[in-house]
Length: 444
Image 1: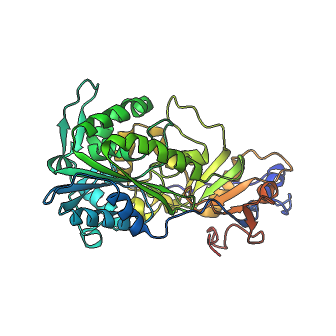
Image 2: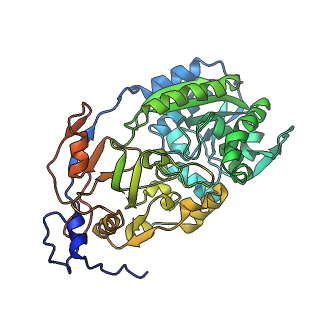
Image 3: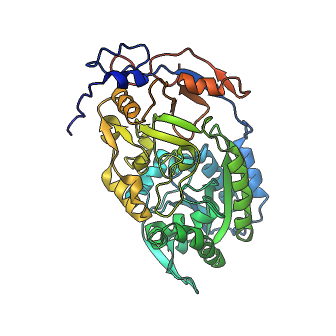
């Protein structure tokens, strides 16, 4: 890979953002804006006794599980707090009913659209027979079920279809591609999750309209088969903690999705300001968001015919790393403008492109500009942000789009938010990078 050339700065360019650096030093790299650490408080309501909450939700729902029945527990690729505990308790509930449960990966085309890849994704979340007490049966084979008057075929994982019933386990949250009911939750898992890559392809080929108009009617067709016995929905707070667990029989699943979605929307964190020159995201990944970084947080959707959000407005986005739990899937990197070599070298292009092509939203997988170091990424981002002469840059740095309670911000951002009830300054202004050009540790 050819490294970026060094950019000599003009006198005016240096003045734009090199606060405290002599404008005469046109051969020197720009001085980077110093950042202060802040913390923000959100609604922290959460469940302390996860096992008890799951047991109460499941026991309160009269699911028809007969002794000896083979029951598939559908688990997806989303990073969910306490997921292995929740799945283990669900397995325990079924065993107490006398059933014989097993785990089915329900994640569309994720995991590189291979049985081994999807099993590995679950193992990364602690979903193994040793941890949850039930074997994992992973396959990309599907069965086509009667579609009725639907315009596309309807599919279900073969293991799930051949079982005596299915229990869905999923987090309910806003969708990353569109807004409307249902979004991400139990209903979507019953369709795209259980339908594997075959169903994902059939729906995504119709773009966003396919997601908006087909998921609900296909879900009704799937639920009408009687194969889905129960759904366990989860909502998390802004601190990535389990906030709510509820169970529903098939006939109430759409209503539960809508109710939990409204709660999830209220709990979702957001950036504290509506305008930034540069946003630094330490890590993106499939365990953070289906798109790697949440479009609702960064204000970028990048889907044809979908209107871009009016808030927030961010000129340049830097993505510095890819989570290990993503298994190389860098879907969503196209929402960033600059990535580091560290992130680039972790990309599994097969897994990324399999997921990307299935989604059909190709813009989200385009390769951003690559820099050798974190400091270089920030330098380029500042140059690309068109900061007016005499202005200090508006910069924020977050760990990822799921955790927004702790941030680094530049002086203009701090001046805007300081004094708010939920904002506390916990550190002085400091250089954003160390001598090696790496961002300083996020935690003190």
